[in-house]
Length: 596
Image (cartoon, rainbow, N blue to C red; front, side, top):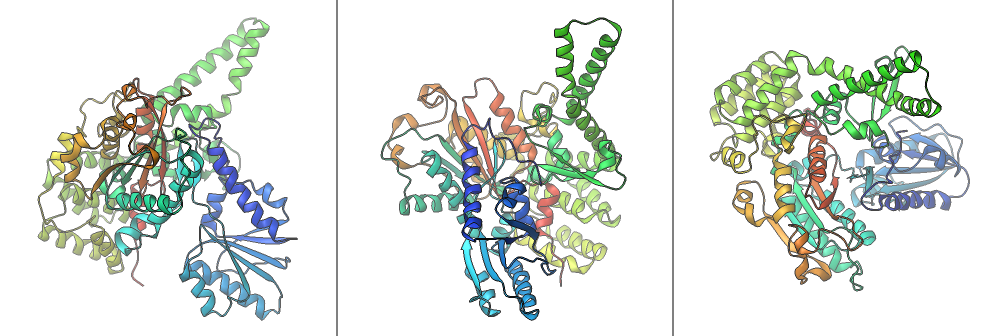
């Protein structure tokens, strides 16, 4: 299982959130006496690995299995299924129970839905005539802390479900998760939202507060001062650009999953031919914490410096006589050697991707599309990629970026590229193209694009970005400042009002409102700094802003937010929450579906 992240330095007590989830799961297991087989759906298993150690589960007489189409082999007479509320997972459970029946096995079955039961799933049990044999319960896991400043709602398909399937159940889930946080940390007094889904979440959250109020009668200062909700739909440009921070590139090429990556052991210098190894990536690793948010070019220089300094120290140790305290310092430095080695190996492996002409060409084209100056050059480049049959996700990623910045493509070009894609990659991809059109990501142009206006007004393209000593968030994409983070910068500094005209050019409504007992309190009027009396919480901590991305966030955006936090004069700490962490490829993949 992945390494459980260290949350000691979190701006709010996330350890209590994690411990509550551990306790709820252990109580479920305790209430089913004796030896039992816990069958977890694999995706949920990944999430649980950030909450609880496997050894802790085994202490409660648990045998662990993963749910799949194969039948479960176990001697236990009690089987507990822990699954997300998805009908296809219910079919695996039914097939398992039917198989047990055919073998004449007498077992006690429990199904616990995460985070809550749904009518659709229970209907599957009824149709299979198994509902009387199964005890149903819920395990209300709404929030998984991924790191000391990042929370995930673990809703992988939320963006596609809302945009394509018209299924907005994930929005209720997000509101419920935030409301749960409010029970621990108080009602969040300021709320700013942008985008259709975000405004809906704000609405559900206020309804939940009316129906099941967090008690704020004792007027305790809430720990979270402001909630900013932002739809992924508002800024689809950023996730489609290649991230250039260290952590962003690791995710682009090696796919970070629940705070770790899996790769060949040989890459990490281990002598285990053909074996895979898991490398944890979170702030427990001090060196990773130092370099994760930097531009990759800078990371290579830092690692080189550290290795050189270590080498010099070693030479001094062997050639001159040292005092005991100098020896002690040297040994202390040696403790960081495994971390340095680990990241040198990873960085070296990354350069095999970043130095490829295909990657550099793609970067170049992304910048050209974002600059929005040379329509024909971009069109020809994408057409050529299709004819060369480059990987479909790579092509779609650029095509969507091109379509989004142009508010769609002229009908003639749209029809032509659509036809060429189906000829090149096969007609089974028609569902994917329909999904993208439904979500407004690859569509016919109906109105003039506002992209140039937005780009200039928010200064999204920054010439001469200094990646080594950055003074602006644009360093995360070497010259492009993420639109989403520019909006959050404004929301924190001065609210929506000064950028109202720009917000109107972006998809979806926006909202700014006061909540709870503070809705009439003048001192909560803005977030603009110390003068309003909220930049410092009474005990001297910085005020806290919770930024929620509805539909996913990239590591580069998280890095940009951390950069904002570290700036002088910034009076707030930030916590980021998201439906899931995405990159251009994983975001495109959620829309991909083959016919039949």
